[in-house]
Length: 480
Image 1 (cartoon, rainbow, N blue to C red):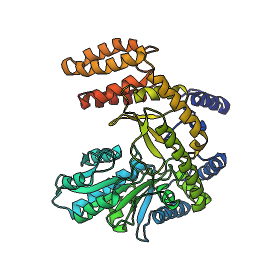
Image 2 (image 1 turned 180 degrees about the vertical axis):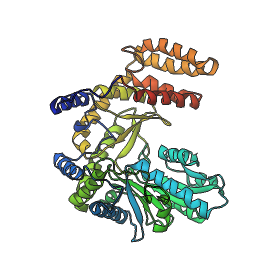
Image 3 (image 1 turned 90 degrees about the vertical axis):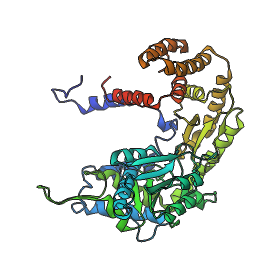
Image 4 (image 1 turned 60 degrees about the horizontal axis):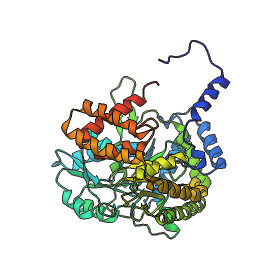
């Protein structure tokens, strides 16, 4: 077990060890990761690093001690609100990321409902099944119920199903612009009108698209309304560290009125240490992301973001056309921006096997369920590798089409395990799975992800799956 070294170390040796550890990470600098890193160029990196480290030691907990941070945050919030068609009344804060922004919005809705919806004795938030799990996390934290509604065939929110699900316990409705899994924008205007009719709150989760969709629309691409120009939208979240290309972690949560934002805040007035106010979830707030966000918005300006968005959208349209030109795979639905999913309706193609083959070429794509597909979030760095990605995808699909023992074994493993979970104790099934995994070759399940993801999708007891994932999380925080 690791412990703090007894002796001082050298800067050179410590940094060398860190670089060696980093060599095992996905090669995002070469555009091999989709959705984890948002990168423009070295010049921008230098700006972000300089701005970040200039405020490396400051603390956003107390803006009265650091008025510079107050200036940066309030101006970032104001610029974000203006971009999203908010007026001078829109109020908000910077947060550490989309999850914290969503937590703030849900906490605000809960406390607002206590004053305005007395009949909501068991408060619920209503959202499409494609809505981000951060809402479920927030509901778990704050004692609410997250109610997920199945989406339409085009993977967007089902307006009438959402309408039918509203009841006296519903305190907030949610729509995504776009939803992360498939990159499609929900019918926000129709959903927000339902919320307004029922006098409840509506949140547009634009963590992914908030700093890209407005520029996509200005370039002439079709983008439906999704922001504060819709009267029923009462709050929004938008991540700066995504398509604003700011340093992590930086997001904004915005409210239509200052009065609504007050429900987000916390104040302790009887602590022996004095009065303790906290506008967001965090206490200590790193100043670096706040400063870097202000720097990048002012550096790029609308002109820079339009140029970047133009480059990204042209690359994405090329990628999507390339995907659809490969027999057996397709882009799901008709995404509005640079987030999309790749699926297959060809029985001879296991899309998770395609991901495994792409991994051989160095590509990192998330696997998704319901339906089975691969996730792509393309940004500026991917413009240079769009053709290479399509070529490698075509080769991967061709390889998966070839009959092989591994593919046959993986499909049998999924089917057999599904059956066994219904009739045998879990520990028996686990032992049998280990034996069957030998059929997959090269180390079994950890080597080839497709069988594991296919298996997860067929587990009859989702509670068992939750425990398996909890075990995984537990293991990730233990020393190897």
